[in-house]
Amino acid sequence: MFEWLSNVRELVFGMQDGVLSTAGVLAGLSGAVSDHQQIVLATLASTAAGALSMAAGAYLSTRAEGEVLAAELDRRARDVAERPYVVQEALLEQLAKEGLTREAAYRVVKLLSSAPQALISTAEAKVYGLTRAMLGSAALDGLVMGVAFVVGALVPLVPYIAIARFPANLAVALAMTAIVLFAMGYFQGWLAHRSQLWRSGGRFLAVAVSAAVVGYLIGIAISPLGAAAG
Amino acid sequence: MLRPGDRAPEIDLACVLNDRISRFTLASVRSDLVVVFFYPHDFSFICPTEVTGFNEALASFARENTTVVGASVDNADSHQRWARELGGVRYPLLADEGGKIARAFGVFDESENAAMRATFLINRDRTIAYALASPINIGRSVAETLRVVEALRTGRLCPADWKPGDQLGPGDRKY
Image 1 (spheres, helix red, strand yellow):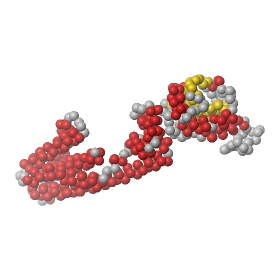
Image 2: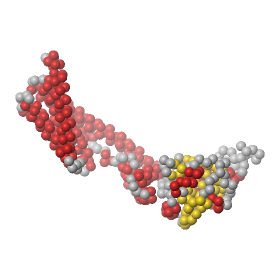
Image 3: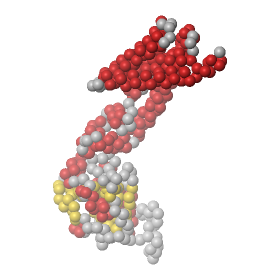
Image 4: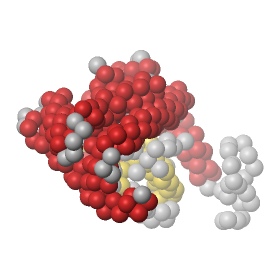
């Protein structure tokens, strides 16, 4: 269950970035260029590059994190083997901080010490803030991120391709973007068992609208460059 | 922290000895030397090696006419349970609740709200003969404490790393 939830991060991040960045590219290009086909091709290229970049980034970051985490976990396991009393004392202190009396904490640690693996995994989580569940699959993270990006990108891109006339195509693309972003925020809030799901959706949407508006304004600002080159 | 030559404060505390709660006063001790070792807490994975170490070496200290007492800020009930956990302790564990005596010796760690790991050897005239403090995470050497007791009992100049059987320094020199 935890592993599935950790992939939700890549799913939401990838989709959100795909939706937002593609809507931003469409809005920006629409402000600078008038040719519908050129805008679509450029956006498709941007989508491909974005998906590959996000996938590679997720793969590399998960791999790097995993290597560092694995090395740290191994180091801590050696500590338990070579100097168990140091780890025992650190775990005792942590349990006492969390509300157990010192004597109760001592007895808990002593009990855990009868099973070295139990002592190691408890110390990892409570004292060092590490857990082997944090070791994700780099390939899976990359794949989820890349696919999610593409799925997100299709949300504004499909209506924009389908409707040739500006500004109707952009308006529909942005409307679809807004609906999906709100839905993503709503879903995120549901996953987190929040009570005000509408607020969660609204926050997501507010960020999106800001990005699209800024993208459009940047497009308008740089449009003279396109005119000069043409 | 008190140093050699300083006068040791009077100690009058509840204690646990041989699984019984009683009272300890420094004034009642008649041995040549008294070892008072402070430790941070009962129920610790670092402390027990010292408490049990002194317990195992008690006969050696008795041969040197030396009394051993341990002290922490835990109360007598805690000392009693801790002593049972360790299989019995045959010297007094003093309940320095609030750290009054630790403060008097200058070894109370305010940040930890507990005594430092500190050892004092007190002469019969109640002056400090030896004082040592170590970090909270490093256990002391019982063997070294015994060696210092044996050296002090010679009343002579003892070279570095002196141990019983080694040559003593000249009898007419103080240093």
